[in-house]
Image (cartoon, rainbow, N blue to C red):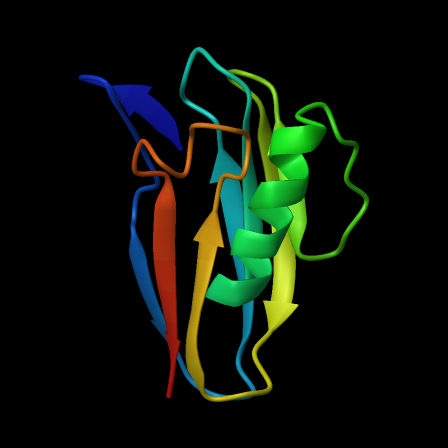
Length: 107
């Protein structure tokens, strides 16, 4: 995760997994700003993003998310028990809008 040329991005921005597969997301914040990785449905992330606009320094202690300072590393281990399309997004105000969103396709 990071920022360049006025955009904020995740690399990769799409991941495909099998239903019931467990994945370890190794997160590296290569940027100069704080970023977060929140794994959820689009609707859940949009709702969470609205809450973040009201409280941008909100502390998180959720198993589906990590907030990372610049140049820091973290991880999330997640088992995908449902098929479908999910997303990971940075919900710090302005970051999602600058392109910081990715997709998980569970087959």
